[in-house]
Length: 445
Image 1 (tube, rainbow, N blue to C red):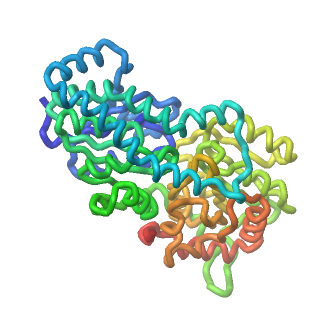
Image 2: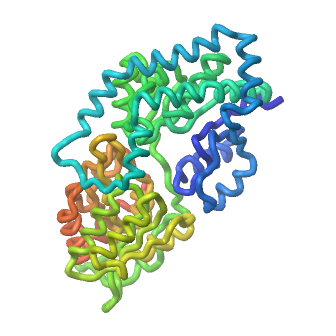
Image 3: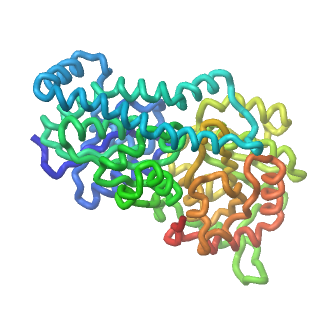
């Protein structure tokens, strides 16, 4: 039997290379003495992991296939023991999904605008996008996971674990909600980005039923409160993601180089004859806007080195785009890298550029990308598209907003001007980055 103070953490997949914020949360809570049991609905899709994630992988309990014998046995046992609670869980999911329909439709309509970004989808991505954002399919998949949630509840009960926290407000939080209903177990969840906006259904009931809901931006909290109602708003906690200042710190080279006479402080930059280095980092998906950045690089009159860190379904398309634009020799695709290597790439960068966009039909977007704060911690200047992140004001409060030159999202031309201006004015850009280099000032909206 387990410790009564143990909390089960449920993830869609764990560990995942680029989802370092949840990995650091688990490690930090354990350092504070919290006992955490790790559960994952599925296994991660990539073998490359952070070293800390690899160390945890062996203790993660990966849930079985919903049609497996183990799941069937658990459901029969619960159905015999508590039939009312069992069937009420199905009814509760349908009712919660139906109750959010009006707010969900209103939100989706707001996402379609004349200023929509370029459509950079393959046919496969288009079909997958429909699969992921269809409200009806979302309901069917939620109902499909109820037996698995019952299996999870039985496993937690057998281990003596009486509390569950789910990361991501979509399917993992739905399973935690079902565990709460069937086993009378307290639950909480953390909402991030796409899990809120891609299919805004079943969110209100989760907030109302949870002990608390955590999210990383006030804009997210406001949207969840709109769905859950004013009585449940007090349960929503805004908790910004942290950054390791030991791993992401300004390199010694940041204290070398030319001196800005106006501020009498050193400024880093490429040596004469070297190409300026631009670094971007993020999963290779359309909403990250890598296609916008590549077109901006092609427009620059000065050749640059562009390092694209990350992996994803758009890899081949982006490589093809770089060839079509005649800049393939300027662009380096690194694939997935651990954070130790990412910190080294930040140290080589003259600019960090993340050209995220809002996908017009699904609303999929960044909220507050961790890579922005990591680059801020290392004092790397950032021209960035204002308004393309839900939580953008959080990363641009009076203490930090001067660290970036803000440009219009979705368009390559403004991105090109912002990048060129930052390259030509490296002294001022570096000064701004130094002013916002401490993530302790991170917060706001």
